[in-house]
View (tube, one colour):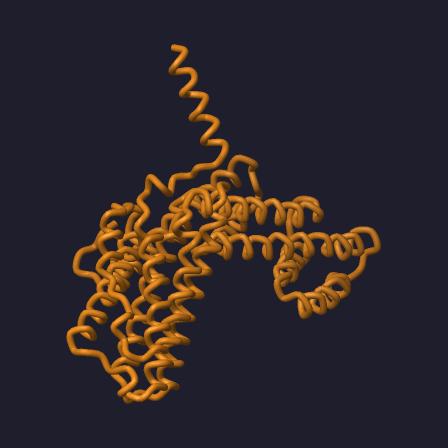
Length: 364
């Protein structure tokens, strides 16, 4: 879905909202069909659960679903006690309810994720039913199981590769912030605290990359290192680049101006070459955030060949730290230069099937 006239961030938000809308509608639809097939007396609880559990990420969906299911099982189990007291010992409603409610409140105070148990207890005891009282907690558990199962299934199946796009989008933001930090330090006359604040922003964006990476690991049964090695290695390359940039910025601000002086032509060449490398990484990450298009290795090789060297720098410290930055910059460009053919899942199952088909083709 492409909407012209919107910024990259605006398109991402619209696409994310569109994907979540489709997932939510699908989860509600699956819950409704499942509740109708088993003839639930109150199918609305299954639909409500699917709305609550379906989140933007697999991790959040599983966490929310687990809390809903565990809390419901606790509440359903506890509700058996007051139901039994009222049916066989003829306890008053509120006495029996309070006997189960107070301990459950104490439990939820220690385990807030089990708060759904209180809701289940209230539904099972305080809402009358024409059927057997024991059927109310059982129906409640079935409804929750349907809603949680539908949400988990939909989150895994429907438009589930959002994490990869989020990872590369956050990676592009991180590289922009690294470049801005270097440019700020090169301009001089800036407090070190400002550079530290910019570095903190880089670290926050890098954490988003890590979070998206962990989400991507859960999206498929094939290990991420086999089906998408570029994405699996991306955070390490970004983290190394961030650390190098911070050291370079510190060196440029700590040394006197005379120690970092360069001939005008050499300085311009160094800045232009590094800027091209950073801009290529940003464009590459942004393109991967839209679609998994791949990239010709020759383009990355050209960008790497155009990178300058730090040999012309007069100060040995600057020459050393800039040399490290350029080395890691080359490694990251080389990583992002791999095309899709090199990133196809190459696990043993795929290889064995391919070999089997090849042998059959030869015998035929």
